[in-house]
Amino acid sequence: AYPCKLPSCPDYGKSWQLRSNFLLHLQEQEAHQTSPTTPAARRAIEIDWRYTTDPYLSPRAAPGFRSREDPDEHIWDYSFKDGNGKVISGRGTKAQME
Image 1 (tube, rainbow, N blue to C red):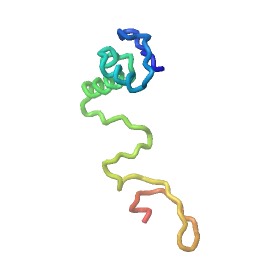
Image 2: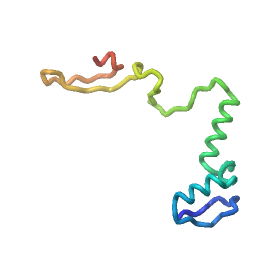
Image 3: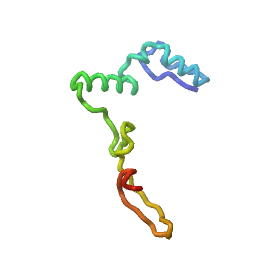
Image 4: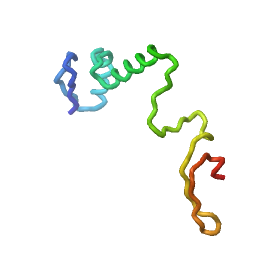
């Protein structure tokens, strides 16, 4: 069962047997869409606040995150065997690996 755990929701405590019905409830109830108590709403508020505070702020990314914009600039750790069986390992871009 999937219970509604948001105290401000009119269906608080009610349970749904099917996940799809519960997800539909989350989409339809205004309490779930605008409440800062849900992780998605808190994230949306954080994003709005970050960009109204500093519009030139770069997007938040995990350490070592490789952006999709220019994959040729990504730095990779590589290790492979050459034709003679010698292991070659290092660190560099795709162009440097070739």
